[in-house]
Length: 384
Image (cartoon, rainbow, N blue to C red):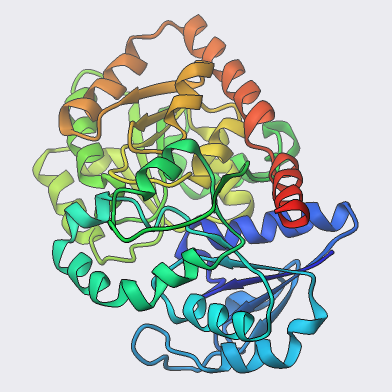
């Protein structure tokens, strides 16, 4: 098959969807299928270099409104006949509405990944934005979902929660596997040495790793407060807060850490990629993500693949699978819940922590590999 993925941007700072496209395209290529991507990125965007799939970037240097881009529809009308299947990734940007209009006019079917963008948490956290979405929803993304051959969810939890945001909702729902490539082993990658060389103060310390975007949704403030509680009685404990500061929140969080007396116990390396990212995983004894909303969490799967147990909130949509496999610990997305995660982890014996590391690897191999993702997606694209 020749598959076209349609997404607003392939910028890795946008989170997991672009990484998922990169990973599954390579797995599909090994199976003999071709993937290409259509985006609203500017063709000169630096993140488009070195991609593993061909990208058709038809955006402008300064997007208007919500990345309104009529070139998406124009390009599809000229090239849609070259593809066997179309997958739209994400909502609330013009690419989804434009792709639906163009493909419907051409009599072509399409599929949609919502990537957690219908989670009711957004309605509760941003009521004004939700009201604006309601003004747009009936003629916009409601129709994108209604007319899709199938709307794809990456967990049963995501599928059920998507029904709670808008009463006007209709979709042919399918749950598909989601995952990422198997990470390099600690002894096969130079990343850990490079990461510790960049941050020598972490050598010989017990490292707790947060690796995601620095924003309110991720519960960063909860983690800093919880870490302050356990750091007082664990002198060797360190916290790594890795990720892009998209909401300009890092300075306020650093001030919060300083007020709590733990500023020197937290490392802020920014966004980590490649060997440095894998090095951070392998240097950590646990991965922590107390998100208020998380559709899947590629970084959660990556941690599991590295054999790093995950300490997550019950708002990470794959928490049931992780809890069932004993691959991590789960608690509510509250200050008390986040503190409990750290306390429970630190109370484990070394043998119990080692056993959980083994179960983390098993959980990844059974549920979250990119090969399983490719097989599941291909089955849907071929059979609906």
